Every structure is written in structure tokens, then in C-alpha cells.
Image (cartoon, rainbow, N blue to C red; front, side):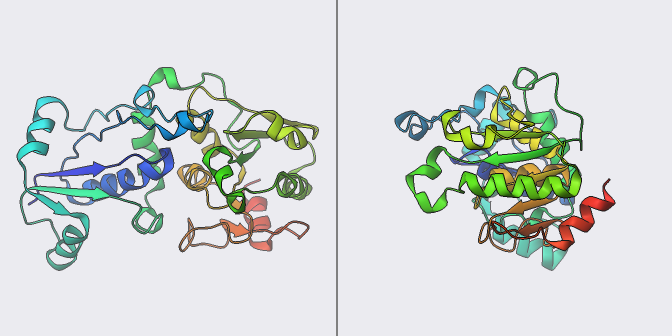
Length: 288
């Protein structure tokens, strides 16, 4: 049997770091092989050079799960243990029903995005929550399922205008969503943009920016919403919804790979000026 599983999270943003970590958590859960703590202390110069609000200093907000292997043992394993790629380990698991080879299975990269995580949302939310430091969380949050969350991604997305979801789309989809869940439903906006960037959105009645104490805090806010209105191609939007099993709408061509849930009743693309997808409307009616 493999001795350990190591999530090599690399240097991307929070959500893209959590995807390989999530696969490692699921693999550890399936096989009983212990997890080596991921390395959060990685300096990312890009956010500083671009003047982004989120500097991605995740070591300030993230910690090891109490069940992770840490300290000198972790360092010794990483220094000396034979390493096996995740794909080889999964092939072995499919053939033999276990991880029969020794050494450390290394899980890295985006893989198949959310496909390997489906069906494990509760497990991954619990794991993620244990890994967020106490001082990274806001004590008072809106009640779970009582609000609409809009994630307006800016930051490095502004380097390529085609990646930026227009504010007009968010305004239109908020109005359409309120026609289904209630005109007075509060809307909380999570964004790495400046307030001036969000002026059109924040001018709507009952819409306000929610600034958490950290990126993990803001992701957990998304997971507590009744529905998430997400930015195109943003894994942060997607993972925030996924961790709470929350319905998600995205702009056209906004989803990655085969989507988040692989279920039209939980996720859909929705164009400016269109009626909301009936599958999402039905789901929201069931969640009333």
C-alpha cells in the first residue's frame, strides 16, 4: 500500500490550489492512506506587480488539517520517499482495489476539474473549513440560504478583457433571480475589484459588497448563499457554490470542462436578457 498522499498545490489562486487538494482528500478518504500537509507558504509575485487587492498570501489564512502528517516526518518523507504520479495510482486502484505500491502518491494540477470531486462536497467542505485559520473568518455572516451571492471576478482577469464578465450581465441576472426568489432578497457581492469597478452593481437597491477577512472567508460566504451568480471561467465562483451544494448560474461559455455538478438542475449558463433556465427555477422552488 502507498505510504502517503501529497497534494502538490503549486502557486495558482485559492480555488485552483484547492482542486488538487480536494482530489488528494478524496483519494485519502477512499483508501485510508494518510495525507501529507500541503505547502501553503509560497510567494506569488504576480498579484503585487499587478496591484491586485488579493495578494494570495494563503499561508496567513490556511493551515494543516489536524489529521495531516506535518513537521519533520513530512519533510523526511518528501525528501526520501519514492513518488508515484496520481494517474498511475488511480490506474492501480482501478485494477487492484487499493494502492498496493509503496511510496508517496503526488496529486497536482487541475486534472478533470470538478469531475473527481462530485459526490464528496460535504467531505471537502469539512476538510476546507478545518484548514482555514480562525482569524481568517468573519464572526457574523448572513443567514445560510437567505441571500443571493454574486462573485465578480476582476484581478488578473482584467489582463484579458474577454475573460471579464460585464457588470451589465450581473445586474440583469440579479433582477431575473429576484423575480424568482423574491424582489427583496439581499444580494452580497464578493469581488477582488475596486469599489469603482462595481458602482453599477452596488447602485441596485439591496445590493452591497461583502468584504470578508480573507479569500477563504469569501469563498465560504458563497457556499452559504441560496444561489451563486458567478463570473465566467472562475473556479472561485464554481468551488464556492460546490462546497455548499448551491445552485450556480454562469454567463454563456462560462463553465469549464463538463461543468461543476454535471447536473442541469444545479448549474446552468444564462444569457443577458433571457429567462432563467427552468431547471434552476425548479431547484430554487424546491429549496424554498
